[in-house]
Every structure is written in C-alpha cells, then in structure tokens.
Image 1 (tube, rainbow, N blue to C red):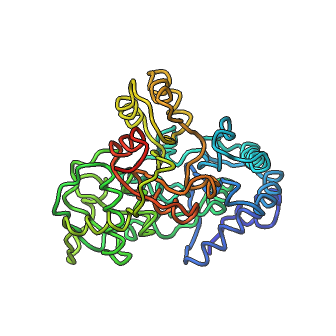
Image 2: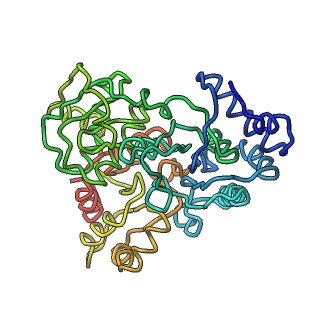
Image 3: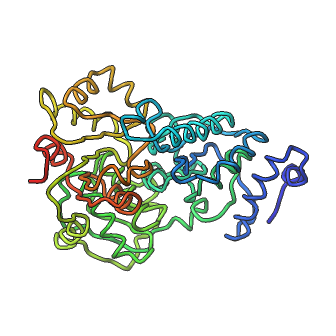
Length: 396
C-alpha cells in the first residue's frame, strides 16, 4: 500500500502515538481490501457510541483521546440513553455514569456530540461524489444511495481512525465502478405508507443475493420512505448502496443490469408476516428508527392533539430537530398526550431488555434490534397505526 512521505512520518511516530495508531488501523484495513492508497475525506460519522455496546472498549477510547484529535467534521451516533432523561428510561446510575464518560471522551477528541443516526439532518450532509468515512448502516445507505456521497460501511473504530487522519483507504464504495447496480428490481405494487419501504428492504434481502439493486417503480418515494428503506437495507441486506431509478444521483451513469426480478403484493404480505409477531398487550410503542425528522414530529403532534395515550409511546429524535420542533409547538402537544420525546439514543442501543416485553414500531430496523438486542416481541405497522395502538393501550 502506497504511503506519502507525511504518512510514513505518521507511522514512524513523528506526529504522536495517537496518529500512529489511527493510521496503522487504516493501513491494516486497506491491505485487507486491496487498497492501493489513502484518499482525503471531508467528514466522518462515528457509530458504536452506546456503553451497552462499548463496555471494555472504553479503555482504548480513553487512551486514544489523550493522544489524538479528529481533523475533519465528525458527528456522533446515538448513545445508550437520553443524557437528560435517562432516569425516565429506566437507566441505572452506573450505566449513566459510564455513558457520560464515553460521550466526554468523544467530546475531548473534537467530535460534534450530535448523538443521532441521521447526521444528514443536523448539518453533516456531504455532496454528490464527496468522499467520507461513515459508520451507522442506515446513514451509509442513505448518503450513498440518496445523496450520492461515497463511503464504505465503516465500523466505529475505522471511522474514528479516518476522522483523526482525515483519510480513508481507497476501495469499495470509493471507486465508481464498485457502486454499479448488478440486478434490476421491479416493484409491481403501490407502497402506501413509509413503513412499507422498511418491509421492502426485508424483501430485497431475500431476493437480491448480495447484489446491488436498481429499483424501479419507487419514483414517488419521500424522504421518510427513503430513510426507512435505507435503514432496512443496511440492516437486512448489509449492502452499503442501492439505486432507485429517478432518485439516486448516479443511477443513470450505469447501464441497467440484464437480470430482472419482480416484487409483488405477496412478497410484501410475507414480509409483514415475518415482521409481526402474535401478542395483544403492548408495553412500548416506538417511533423514530432512524431518528424522526421535523415532518414526522408534525404528523405525530397532529394525531395526538388533545388526546391521551394509554401505553408507553416514545419518539426518538436528535436534539437539533427537537429544538425546532419545540419552537413550532410540536413537542408540547406530543408530550401533552403522555408520550415522551427522547433524544441522544434509540431503543436499538439502549439497555431495555428487562423493562419491556412487547414493542410496536413503524421501523423494520427497529424490529430487528428490538428482537435481537432487547428480546422484545415486535410488530411493524404504519405510523398512524402506532399512534392508534398507543391511544387504545393495546393491540386491536
């Protein structure tokens, strides 16, 4: 792997131990994936923030923070709790103290403490063709597929190393040809609710065999649908990119693949059968995976106005979006119903395993992590149905 003179000096330790460690990580990754060199990046987004996931890794972070700072715009994924309302979430004192320490370590390194999985909604929005190093699978799929920026699916450590050095190995999604679609997907039905796009991501995981799809028939999808599709694709397929005809900025740059598959109403029916388990008592209704945007909060407030919920309803969002929603009066209405608007975290990374047993959500990704991390029984429905369940106090 080719290194510039300055990169060789970093490896030699001339710029400090933290820089040396970070570059060694990038070089090792580059060698694994056959990268010939490093390329500059304009931003990074760090995942793996929750102490629920980090645990013993906090020692490595603490050591690195004493030796290095980030050199590009860098944002932070959700942690394991709302930093102000953690007691209301049922988080214990010990976990809260450790989570605060993790956040302080990242702050010390010069990272913007956004604590959101939608950094593109809080000021970290790259342009088409811009090279970045992002973790968080939903955000990776979104900026590759919707924005046209270029990033591999980084781990928390590799994204942090790239943020410190300001470079990343040149392989995978940083190479135009590697981003080409491999299979055409015709969606032969109308998707009527944003949650349907999350279910579609699950269907695609069963249909495309790890091939990058060019999806036809979704020209009317809105940002909420794209966000839920990106989250589902990142979760169930592991693919860092998909193309939608008429949406993805570079979709027209490639020839349409010859292999074609069809998706119909039966495929979607089977997806929802998988995503929905049998239960009637609902412990928690959760909206906001990925974090809710301003329009979603407006819709939620509209449906909850002058009403009272009968079971726990949590809406997760970023602090920046919360601030604007408060200014517009949405938060007062939502919380006036008894619901909670939670920031800095999400159910996927918060330690809630023993607090709730059943979950209703509008997110296919939320289903995956609700089952896998917290062992919930889960149903995936529309946002309107989520609100209806919370108002009724159970499944109908």
